[in-house]
Each structure stands twice: as C-alpha cells, then as structure tokens.
Length: 85
Image (cartoon, rainbow, N blue to C red):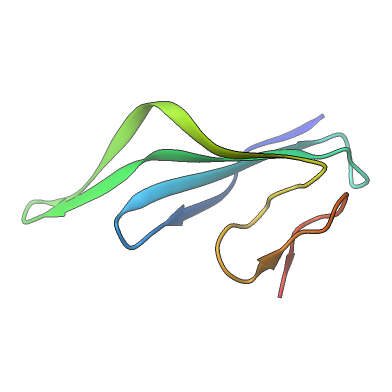
C-alpha cells in the first residue's frame, strides 16, 4: 500500500492550510483520498505563524479517486490519477 500522508498543500487567501492525502496499492487503484484543514497561518508585525489544528478536520473523502493536487487546474476521473490541465 502506497500512503502519501501529504500529496498536496494549499494555502487560501485567508491563510487556511489545506492538505490532501492519498493511498493506493499501485497505479491501477483502488484509490482513497481525503482533504483536511490542518490549520491557519497568522501574519503580523513579528512574522508568520501557523496555528495548527489539534486534530485534522476532514473536509472531504474520496473513494476511487487519488487526489494529488488541490485547487484550480486539477481534474479527476473515476479510478484514475488526478491530472493537471
């Protein structure tokens, strides 16, 4: 089983840190993925700090999909890798 604890990171304009994770036994699946909120970045005069969530908050879970990229420009089809547009 291939486990990608973090297959992608994204920080939105509000500073929220999203993490995608994926598992698969090989290139042909079956795949499972999830997207989590890991915390939020705070910016002030002293610098940038991450306020990490005490537990990962799952936003979505995906059976039969491997999420390897979040945000615009990604597409997924059932039973295949996400691909860049």
